[in-house]
Image (cartoon, rainbow, N blue to C red; front, side, top):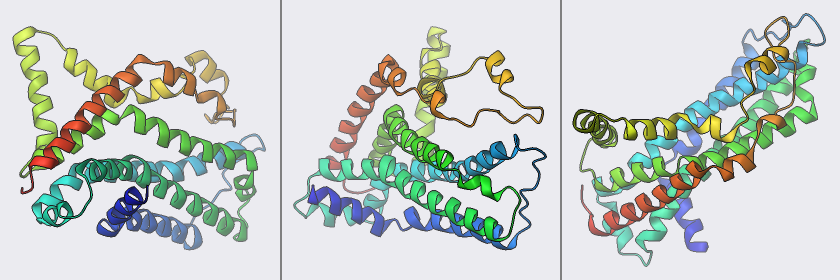
Length: 288
């Protein structure tokens, strides 16, 4: 375990953007709350302000989630390529650390450690903004301090981290295979082979099996991990202003259905196979 801990620390040392980017975003949001024209007095009734507070906290989280997904994708695509490009892989291979341990540490950093850093930064940012808006005397700032809402926010973040790591395991595995194999233009190599395979399948077989599989994996996460309310149910929970009346996220989470979904474990199996491929490629390729 100490070896893996040091390998993860190495990733933080070599990739300072892991913690610098969320810190910059958090500082920008805090400065905007402190000196910008942020007004929470839009709610016209007591029934609307709690929803407004929840939407504000959720909006802060969405900002971090979007940036996190972009950076984590790039990190997984670059983590094995960059060490071949600058020849540092030769030094690391001279140490008594296996290729398996190195690749697993990089995978852990990309799918768990980076989201956790963004989660903690987003938490501190929302707390700081709530303090600032309360000091500024915003009329709806008190709604940001509801304990149940903070608890739901923590649960949602942790649920997202765990379920996305499982669901997108084949995506992470593919990105690492490309990172370990490509000599240049890793971004193009991560997209072009899959696009070409989809086109060739359509031309020669007239089917869309691969396209549907890719679409399900890339876009099907929400349907697999969250309960989707019917249109009637969703409409009945909307207020006159279009804000959901419910303040609870618990009915939306469905971990049991996520774990029972066959697509979840098919993805895990494919991701494991691709990860083995990434390990073998790192074992054999030292230079870009």
